[in-house]
Structure formats: C-alpha cells, structure tokens
Image (cartoon, rainbow, N blue to C red; front, side):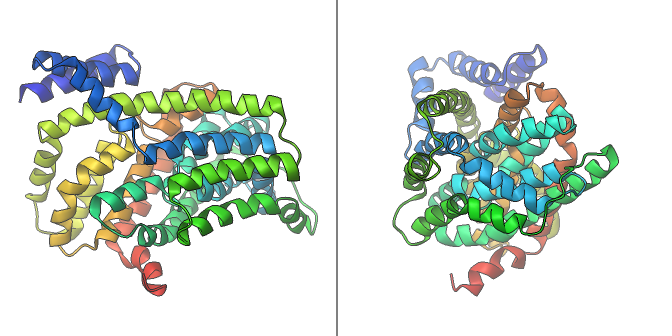
Length: 426
C-alpha cells in the first residue's frame, strides 16, 4: 500500500503549493515509478499509449472543426439561431449558450471542443451584456459537457467498445438524457439570472427565427450530415470529425465565403494550443490512472462500497458519488476504461441494463468536465474568459448540483434512458 500513499501524498502536496494540475499528476506518478525502481521509459510508454489511439484523433479534428466554424460563420449562425429562440427572457444569452452547446454537441462529440467553439463566441458576448465574467465561463464550461452526452459521443464509443455494447443504441439512449441535462442547466441559469438581473435585451420581430434558420441552414445541416453518416454506417465518429472539417471548409469557402487565409491560420493556431493543453493532461492523467489500476485502488473502493448495502437505490447513490469523485481526478476516457470492468459486472448482477449503466457513467463523466482539479472545460473557459479556475469553480457549483440531480433521476428511472432505443427497436 506504499504506492497509493506516495501517489496521493505527492499529488495533494503539489496542489497545495500551487503546482499546475499537469505537474501534480505527472510528478506524483513519476515519483511512484522511481520509488518502485521501475524503468522511466515504461512510464512514458504508458502515457504515450493514452494519446496514440484512433478515437483520440477525433479530438484535434473536432477542435479544428469548431475553430473553423467560427471563421466560416457557422458557429455565429448557430449562436444567432439560439439567441433568437431565447429572446429577451432573463438569462437569455445564457440560454443561448446552452442551446448552442446542444447544437454544437451534435457535431463535435467532445466536451472541450464544444466549450471552445461556443465559448469563443458566447463568453465575450455575455460579458459585454453585463454578465459576470466568471459566471459566463462557468455556464459555458458546464454546458460544454453536453457534447459528450448528445450524440455523437466519443466517451460512448469508448464505453461501447469496453463493454461490448451497441454504440448506435448508446447514441440513441443519450438523446433524452442530454436534453434533460440541458433543461436543468437552463432552469438554473434562469433562476440565477433573474436574481442577478442578467438579461438578453433583444426583442426580435416576427419572422426573425425563420430568417435566422434560413440564413443558417448550412449550419443546421452540419449535425445532420455528421450524425446521418454515423447512423447510416458511412463513417465512424473519428472519421466524422474529419468529415466535419472538410464540410466546414467547403461551406466557409464556397457557400458563406467568409473563411479567409488569416482565419484558417488562426484556427490552426487555436487548435494546436487547445489540443496540446488537453492532450498533455490526458498524457499525465493516464500515467496516474495506470498506477491506480496496478494497485487495484478502484476495485478496492468499488468493492467496499458495494459491500455496504444490498439496496439498489443506495448502491446507485454510492456509485454516482464514486464516479463523480473519480471524474475529478481522471480524464474521461481513462475513467471509463478503468471503472467499466470493475463496476459493470456488479451492476449487471443487480439487474441493471448495461446501456442504462453506460449512460449514467457518461453523464457522471460529463459532470467531471466542469469540476476541478482536472475539468478540461474549466481550463478552456478560464483561458477564454481570463479568470482563475477558483472563480469559475465557485460559480459552477449550482450547475453541478443540478446535473447531479438529473443523473440521479436517470439512475432511478431507467425508462428515461431505455425507452427511445426500445421505441426504435434497438
């Protein structure tokens, strides 16, 4: 048990003295390897394997697609449609940010990519309208997590492969939970905005929505093309990311005619910066997670929790709390790969459908995108809004609590997850 004490001791010590999360994760893992006398090369190989995979290739492609959509005018049109739909209600721009995240989530399949694409447009707009800078970043980071619940979803693909379950069925099952999470965020945003006096201030004339949809028809068709290709089997989600890049290039150059060389260069620069920041966290987090697995820490924690009670409802509560806690420290894909072999057999033995468990797992990982110390969306929102992680974390607490409530509903009422796949015969 020496390795876990060294791992967590070094990790929390580095966090307390103010070290970046990447340094804390990497240095604590490295310390354990050196203390055990293992070869340093094995640590690097373990971490490299985390980012040297086909599904991870979708991350830079989707981020590039999101950046290009801003230069090509696609993101602006999607956000405008969402803003017209929101109208002058309290928290209208926040409502628009959530809607835009839903729209873009159906394109990107990635929480960080959704946060980056929507945040680059919505955070400055919300700040200009008087919204708090940290609140704008917290809302955008929280709603950006919808990108991994609303299909296509990279984490769902990873879970499907790990659990040998139908990815198409997982995608179908994720639609209603994604809408419910978005609805919860909208309610929380409305209540907070009403209290703070945040408004959108725009009263749109009759026919504005029809005009906005007509102007943004190619933006609306983007998720149709991508999801249609996935559901029809024309390409995988990773290939869909590349398709979205070429679709955006075509629309930006030949249809909207707004994509210029400077915009293309800026998109490449932002993609390199955001991808590098996320991948280096994944790199160190996987090394950290590998030590947890080697010492069977997730297995011991899960087994001890499940031995506490025979009540399925209480077990669900324990599992959700455990998953949210793990998601605070481990990257989403690593979390799924680590806990699925441990928890899925236990949950199935208790009568839980694997698809049901998978959606709850992904939704818990969605919450992890906006919880420190590892939440990738928080880092992206912090960089765009130029505020500290601590400020965003405090403002994100109401949204996290609402999302936890929605996840509890999904766990206790499996029909909310399974009825749509059953309706379509999956």
